[in-house]
Image (cartoon, rainbow, N blue to C red; front, side):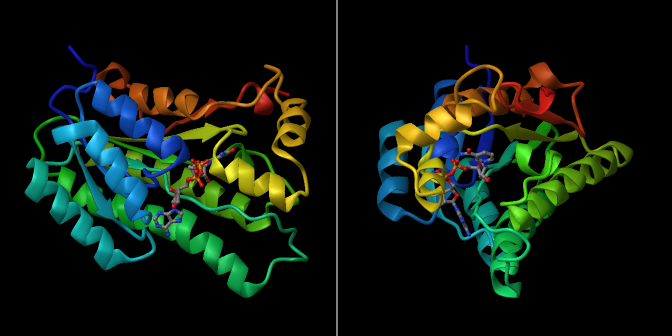
Length: 255
Ligand code: NAI
């Protein structure tokens, strides 16, 4: 018996890193998953490997119309929507001095506006679902605490945390049976970390060693560390948890 038997999930940013690990763990736990992303080759490969319980959908989270098509696709394919893992995101190394109006809006559009579209449309669909539903967004340690070199990224993730609380209270007040939470990862070894290391002119080994110093646990995280937190918040074991951010950060923000 799986922890997500009979559930249907949309996972954004599902073709790499944390989202890919989440798709694999959710499928293993009996969930039918719509793996969303922009990389067709990777999305189709993951969906094929997961078999009949998975499908790939090409989604650019910055497009409201594309989001609507994604929800429609999910209903056509699997009949309902119980879980949204609002995980797609991008980061860039820039201080407030380096940030331009264009680069700021690029980060906000993907990490904040894209997550808003998903949250809004998922709630619209889930309100007719008689089963318990769950929305979980990926925020970050950045935004919970400030970091001068991730100015726009911190802004977007802090906003997403606030949106999570507002939506959770709304869903509770309306008695919708939808819980809304967030997970805040510390540094996780994914393609985003590879890009971050390159932007900091470090090899991946240097990056892993240097960044680990800021995590009291002594090392960086794996995509599965975050996927398992999503699993807890998506399944009915967390039925009394809403409006919260679960820190999965190796103690980064405990200091
Ligand atoms: P990743 O770069 O491996 O995955 C991000 C995914 O989002 C990719 O599949 C990418 O194609 C997708 N994506 C980006 N823009 C998109 C768009 N406009 N439409 C649709 N998909 C889009 O990175 P990772 O690490 O797996 O990131 C997942 C989430 O975790 C992100 O929200 C990120 O901000 C967050 N996060 C990651 C941390 C890390 O250290 N890796 C730390 C804290 C948060």
